[in-house]
Structures are given as structure tokens and as C-alpha cells.
View 1: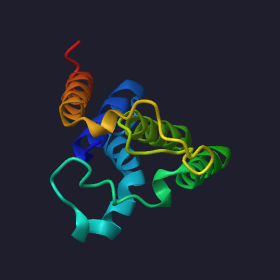
View 2: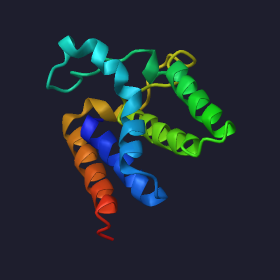
View 3: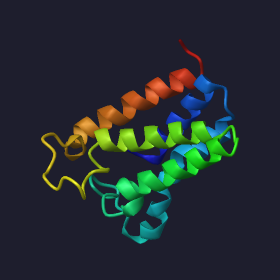
Length: 141
């Protein structure tokens, strides 16, 4: 998904949990830090960001970020569980979009359905999620 979608996800989670909005946005964008290492290869087209994936978008990255959040929670930091929630949503959204394959190293077979390959479906996903998250953020419901 796009940076906008991950940002609106964090903002909506902040509103739902009562956490500061900057925390939600920051925590939701954190797994995409690996994109900065591939900034010269970015292209505005389907799959244009697919090559901007590092271990942070696989099982190892998910594990590292979970340990950070769990460690913070165990040390009494109230942001720890929220960190885990935001990161989990980031990976889930990327996973349903077909761009993050956290179990790729364990199960190398291709997925039966890759939602990320159809450009029209990607647009519908992005717009739908952003509308839902922005309506939560602005308390439309």
C-alpha cells in the first residue's frame, strides 16, 4: 500500500485507541523505512515499489519490530502495545495487497491470489481503506 494509506491507518488507530496521532502515523510508517534505501529505483507504476523491499518486509522484520514493541511493553512503556498494533496493521495491509510475503522463506510457493498484481484492484483497495480510515479519523460515523 502507499504511504498515505499507512498514514491514515495510523491516524485511525490513534483515534480508536486514544493515543497521540503522531504516534500512530509514525508507528504505522516505520516498517517502510527500508524504502529510503531504494529511493533511486522508485517508479510510479504497478510494482514500482516492489523492488524497494528488504528483510523488514519479511518474517525477520516483523519479528524484530514485534520484539521492540513487546520489550517496550514489558518495560512498562505504554506505547509498546500500540506500537505492535500499528506494525501489525502495516504488515496485514501489505500482505492482503500482495506486496509483503512474511512467510516467503518458509513457504516458497506462489500465493493462489495476488491482490497486488491487478492495478484496478489496487486502486479500489487504496481508496476504500483511505475512506474508511479518514472517516474514523474525522469521526464521520
